[in-house]
Image 1: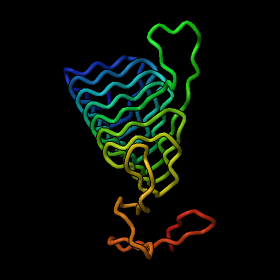
Image 2 (image 1 turned 45 degrees about the vertical axis):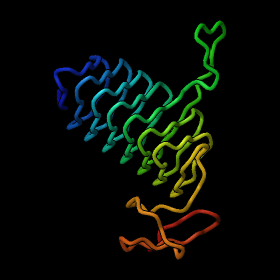
Image 3 (image 1 turned 180 degrees about the vertical axis):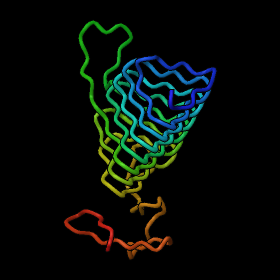
Image 4 (image 1 turned 135 degrees about the vertical axis):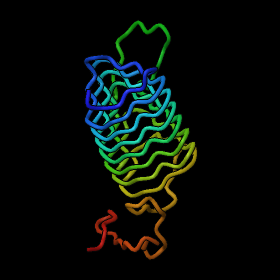
Length: 185
């Protein structure tokens, strides 16, 4: 085993967990789950088979990541975020249901207690505010808040909000090209 597993964590032997990742107490990782290297999976998380978590991902306490959810590298997932993988759930489903895949792209941040509906993509370096309910795709570098989530501005790669001139306090500057935010070189 080339990762840390707390004594109180449940990790199926056929789950794939990358080097130097840390899995804390009361985590349950099922067969078929894939977790990259250098990840931190906080207390009380559940990761279902078919879920994919990239490298250098932080998943805070109490997050459920179900089949069909793909989280790319360098993503932060805040405590008690809920990912949904069935738009029409029923307790005793008699018919088959369709898995709708969800993608969280590289560098995105999801605030605590956010709810992410299935079938959406959260773009690169986007920021989802705490408690937001994401029902539609979020473009790269966009900051969204509320229920339903709505855009309030642009985010820098560092996570801070850009000013009206598309400049960040960290020193990076951006421009808009064909409705996409692009870092200036």
